[in-house]
Image (cartoon, rainbow, N blue to C red; front, top):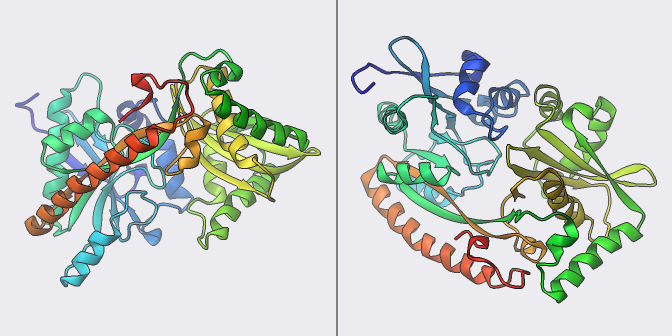
Length: 390
């Protein structure tokens, strides 16, 4: 394979490659890299040039035209919807009279979830394909006179490969839950200290005593009228913070149809009427909590809907991990532990690259210290070594 020519092809839409060919590379560990997911983002007009997400997905083909590698890739004209913040970098470019945008971005839009970013086909030489993917993008950035290329939330193995290729590693901290073969939620709570266990039970009891119960539905079980209600809750969360929602009602409806088993909602009901929702996605062994919204203020309802209900679902279904989204030290008392995530950055200008590399190294030390400090406050009797993913 080292001798065979490899063709790099940049796509202006995920629709420019057959779903079967792309999915053979993406695999099925997560829904987010699936052709159906990326196409829904485009066809619902959420991730399109008008919103600052112009597709440039990269596909590698061998001499026979077989797709052997790929990556999601976008030409971005802003940094919103990424969850790895580089606004200060853009400002520094502007202060020097240089353009930071457009930039290249390898990520799943609006989705701060760890996963594969350099897709390699079955039977292909992983190291070779990954090297060609990296080289193809950096050369494209140089040819197009672009400032940079950013790879967000790669898995640990690919993060190391990107760093070895010269990209700048940046670190951040999320809070994840890990399933240690609990056979029930109560069994999970027995690992808490008495004080923290009492607090968790009190939070759950408050919701139950308010007369609120929960319904679980997969995407294929949600009809249009119910989506209207649930989407209003989701949208209200954004509006309360002065932003328009990243995702449209059409996007969720499309995902409900094309990936019906990978989308799950927990609906909180009072007197039979929906009052809140948490929207999740289901991977092969991981639950991903993504969005939340409520029609009113109810004590402890956020914790119950977004966290305890998700943990209970993982235990019931045997899922090994629960990633509830970015930020939020309030997750720690509910059983989530600090977990380091990374991103990788190619900066074309050597002067800015040196400055950013120095900044990222100093930032990483701060992130490690922060994660270790927060890790001292997990609710468990004693956190096993594997409990803290630093």
